[in-house]
Image 1 (cartoon, chains in turn brown, red):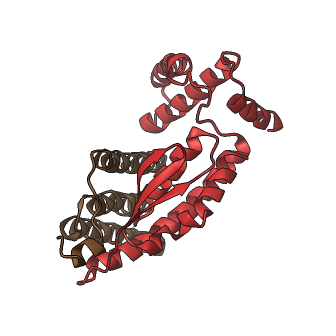
Image 2: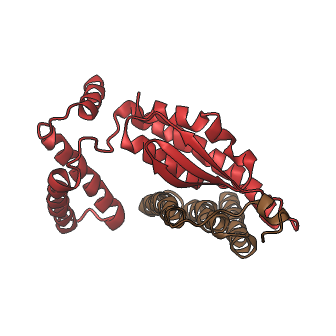
Image 3: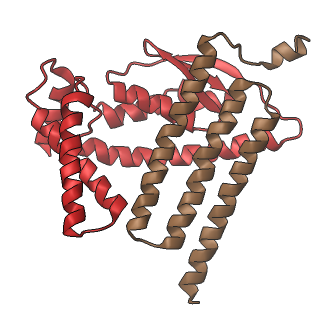
Length: 111
Length: 180
């Protein structure tokens, strides 16, 4: 392996691990956060950073080719659809009257 | 280029539609064709011919049926260049906020204090409204819940994440991209 190939693989590995880390944080977030809205944060955010980093790592590993453009297209669609879905979920909950959890409520003994 | 800019401003103001139908048709067909070429990655005559046929048919359909509203999400050249700059800014914001949220989620005490804020904006195009709503949701720690009459209802995991929205930084940048 040439030096550039080693560097490329290293960068790609670091990016993939970063992506996996943010997916893990997102999953932990879904489990730990207190209510629907804050869980929606976690669920939509691992897409943004996790998928972004993993896709970027693939693009780096593959080098510049037609497939890189495909990866960019996938990233674009993830970045467009993920917030739209998150917004649709939160809006539906909000309009049906689900009240967001706040810290005051808990210290007041309500929860 | 200046002609392109002029057309963009006419398009968003003029209530009469139809005269720019050929432009819309050309734009959507070209976009579809480029997308086809990226996905197939093949320049064989049969593949390109197939793509061209489909692009023209779908381009015609979208110009006459899908984008019949006055304000199509079309950018001028100058706006497109600014949009690329904006994406760079947004990515930086996303990464910084993601680290902030990760710290909060992994902290054993989970020091979050969610607040719901509302923020009024003065946009004139639907595309900028969508851009701001989606940028807010993409940025970790903030989530657009509702948008009505230019007032955004935003859920923040912690008050510190709402800074860029409340001081109008995001809004100013989006106005520069889509409305100037």
